Length: 240
Ligand SMILES: [Fe+2]
Image 1 (cartoon, rainbow, N blue to C red):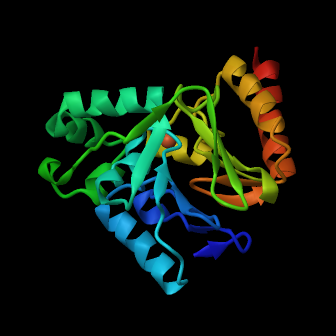
Image 2: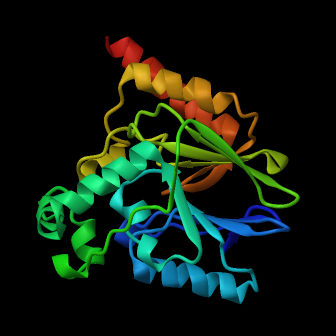
């Protein structure tokens, strides 16, 4: 586990599988996980890392968005799970599409990570979160809070950020990325739209966080994060 503080840590991302980090926040009453990871194998690695640190298992898992690498580990998590209504809707769409279709959609020249994680369509298992929320929600973990907010983002329409105000730390999920449709987009950062990016910058600036944790790159300063995003915004505006 990579530690940010006594209370905040995460299982680092794994580029080889395009696995995002799985976050952990320890409260005095109970602990939470941020994201469910790509698969049951990914969740098992997270649980083993927590056990090594003698940390209690999470009672609640919060999804940052519906993308498979953040949500398909849900059947393996401990306790309950929660996501915004849009994330629940997207996961229901995935369930309705069926494993065969999902698997086929990711078996392309452009993006192959789902195939690396799952050897066959049958091995995919998707679950809906236990709880859906709209807008924002504050959870008291005991001695520390988690503020969940569904915000506009250049990445998806279902991005939830999780701020821990006492620690001035915010989990951004993939929300700082553009729209990703290929392996090449993972390197360039994807496609950005001005309106979404500018609304996103306004939203994340309002939390007063100093540490920003992004799912595929880990922790950095909020100042650097905003600097990067504002440069992207300036680039887009210059191009128009
Ligand atoms: Fe994503």
